[in-house]
Image (cartoon, rainbow, N blue to C red):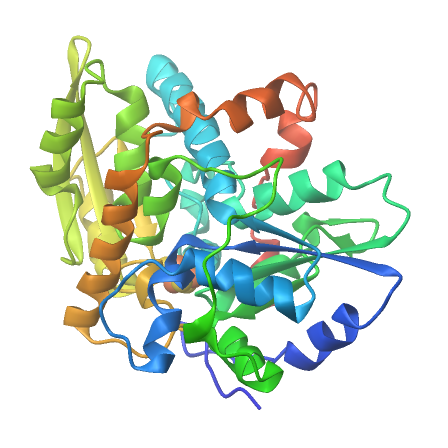
Length: 371
Ligand code: SF4
């Protein structure tokens, strides 16, 4: 049984592998799976490969052979998050209200804010995490299926299990994401399957949600959310600007990073924090008036999701390699910005029409604090 713990050390985490095997064996179930960005650069370590290489194609191949019916990339959900969070940020900037805007992708950070800083909840983005956005889109997409649709999310994260179980992410008691498997649990299932991961020929994810942008993929590393948002907000969207951005205080494994970008007549001040102890220091500096920011990315795990508690253990050097693996994927991606992803554009014109708030946003009122 899994003995993983959440990033705050508060709970022992349930192992869901037996439930997933049962679902995969049920002919009445359609099992749909989404894979988070950080998983693809860490799973290979269980086989002794420590190069941080992106092995998404092999993960897709092994999941298909294990019996998953449809396989998608959570980075598509991250593309939605980029668009929604940027719109929200621009609206708040225009009205100069509820700033700084804190990101909302990390459930351990949300819980921390609910417990320690409920006064900051109004500053946290109303955007659901990429996992929850995509979970809601998938349930909506398959709502007329003649089978029972089961959405599984493979995450680097133990806190995502608690996020999926929150009341805010259920409709009449049914969650948008039915099960969260950590990278470690997936490794366990691959071993149980008898399949040889290393021998898998890479395969592509399924349509209609394939091909996320590079911006969606870098969500898995500290600074990735911020970089994706800046790519959308920045006036100059040239490749050179994107390259410059990469070296302007957003990338790297430091626990606190700061950057500023020109935006019309203004300069936007941005902080990127990973590790809750670092977040606490920054919050105190903001509350005392010592620091001022417009946008703050907070990830509970040092280095971001690549260093999540559901991943194989990694030291700082190994986390940096995983981060490089994601940046390399972004570099090779022909779509760099979320708003240029045709899948996302068609979602807004179709499935999401009139349902953006219902499916992509959430208001945290501190109800999760006792869970
Ligand atoms: Fe989960 Fe850690 Fe990523 Fe937060 S930073 S979403 S706790 S893996």
